[in-house]
Image 1 (spheres, rainbow over the protein chains, first blue to last red):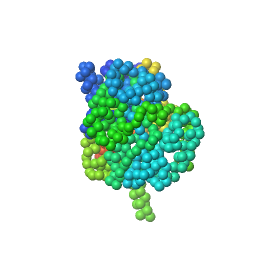
Image 2 (cartoon, one colour; image 1 turned 120 degrees about the vertical axis):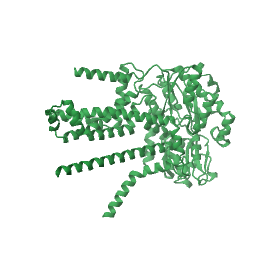
Image 3 (cartoon, each protein chain N blue to C red; image 1 turned 180 degrees about the vertical axis):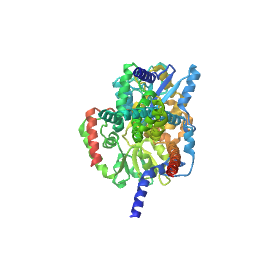
Image 4 (cartoon, each protein chain N blue to C red; image 1 turned 90 degrees about the vertical axis):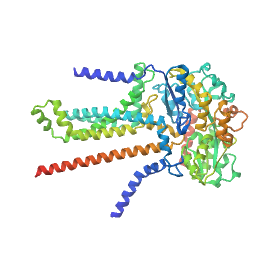
Length: 366
Length: 273
């Protein structure tokens, strides 16, 4: 009798656990951390505004579950495990290419996303989604070199050579991940960052060994504090993050920024994964994100450049950002797509990736 | 000799508390920077109160920790009582070892294996997304329960086994003897176990990370995903608050403890006389 009771209780417990999903309308959004205007410091609260807007427009209550990830790989492992179901995700370009090739994305119905027309044409047909089936670009960025004008001589700036300049030995920061670090060396040499030719990577490896004695530290987000405090004077990072550093720089530090001739460009785009439960709602959400107010609020919050013409042509946005920021975030270029398809990181085959990682370990050990 | 031992403890305390001190100081910084202290301000505390996502993550974490603690304390206590009653020696040591496994297993293995199991069972039932609050709760109970057992079992062994026997001799039902005699005796163990379970559940990241479903984000997961950009000073403010709440709880429990032991000592004294 007791045993039967125990079995019954455990069955009920299991059922409760799997009966979590009711019929209420929910939308699950999975985005990078700190990558949406969330209402802090008096900004626009995108998620709550969307819930309000939806109820006013469609007369139905809706709950948005908003979760965040720290890297494309984290997001990928979660989605591909099949354990969760998200309706909208915002990964980066190379991950989109990979997910599309593994059938993890659904083609979008652009009838539900009329605001797609505001996306600049140069952000369409990029390598990760050549037929514009799966993605709506959310933000993009370009890697540039940040330097402290109180330490670095203006005449030395302009290209990647600054990061190899012996004069600033012990003041230089290099990326602490293989792809980005090798990228700087390959751009400096003028080679192809997506090459499958080992000789290219060997040459880059030699460059990194030359640079090694001058490097103060290999960093990722530690770069913020080191640059802000004047601990280091030269480092490469994303344009949007440069402004975050300027906001917090110490008194005796004067951070400046420039783009080398060849550099990495990236795009983060909104997609609907194949595990989505409510595709139409997801498309409505994507469309909402492209409308004027949320798009501007997000661009101002994240400090990244927006591919949305409603944003970069908006007078108050341009005024809020300031002339200098606009010049850095939206550099004049003939065609984004041409540069992008030439210089952006694409998915490498596993063998090349292994090879790079082995070389990279040697750089750090030597 | 004395000086060197003082220096030694100073260094140890320095290592233990310097990080917390830095966090505490910079939570009052006016600027966002971790390098420049530009002035005292409560700005980040104000920001924190208005950050509904973080507050929701905090309440999620507390709800999860409280429910995991409640369930694992009850389950762990029952398990300890059961193990203590086992008379077959080998069976008993098998049970002891088995309950130790989740404790000695690396978090990452517990996390991944739990996730795989949830996905498998979920597929079996035809659920499209198998991870939710329930699965996270099961995972937390799984790694908290052994710690409760570990705390309660020694108390049971210390207890004179003739006490409940005497109670039953005097007419108590077995249940009554457990509730009135055994339970008060092992209560300190249960409380320590519950506190341990609560703190473990509160700061667990790895296992939660693998078993978290959509829309239920705990605080450690939220903070981790902030590392693409810099972690906002709001989090320093939150950590400072959590630190002081824990500190005051600790102080209170110590004061209560001291009072209890003083009472006990007085009692023993009066008995001797």
